[in-house]
Amino acid sequence: MNVRIIRAREDRAAVYLIVAVAILACGAIGMLRGAQTQDGPKVDVRNVPPPGPASQGKVEGHMPPLTAAGNLKEFLTTHPAPEIWLVFARPMGWNGGPSNNQTEGLKVELPAQAISILQTQWKAVVASRYKEDVEGLPDVESFTREDASIARASTDALQGLTKVTIDAPDGKRPISWREAEGLVHFVNAKSSELIAGSKEHK
Image 1 (spheres, rainbow, N blue to C red):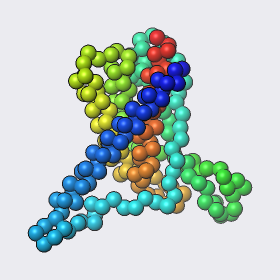
Image 2: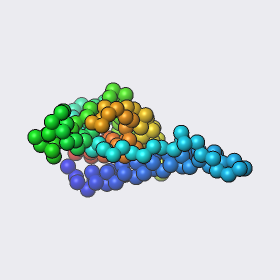
Image 3: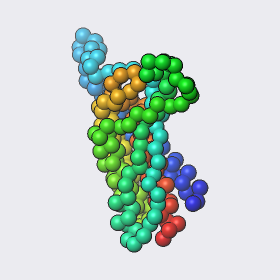
């Protein structure tokens, strides 16, 4: 597999995530500005994101094996999304006693709603990247349109994930902003690997 191709796609994935974060940040600033009145700025605290939890999950996962055969477009656009989960540092005294291995992470599965959100993002990103990197596009406007589609899918996933509750080691809570960013980036990076790998099997 061409490592330079994969790294280039990962760089693009990072750009898409930055764009998604910027879009959401601008929206938050707009809400805060809209809350100002003639008596001075009045901010509704319900619109201010809460601070992240002390224990943040690390994103881990893997891709199903790449075994391209037959129609490449159909194979890529129907290829299953990567399996993804979060890993937390194991708290002291977990399960009522000291852990035998304090360095071992505690795996937390994502709920069905989060998996559905990531699958939707995956399908949109793979479809756009197939057009860009395999089929080829005729002009800059076409590339801009597909890049915008990827950024939009990333933004939608980021927003949706932060509304999903997970069963973290320290209790049930919504997925944090940082965790959502990691999940979205993981999907983007793996979609790049899928496209790069498929091009070697053509």
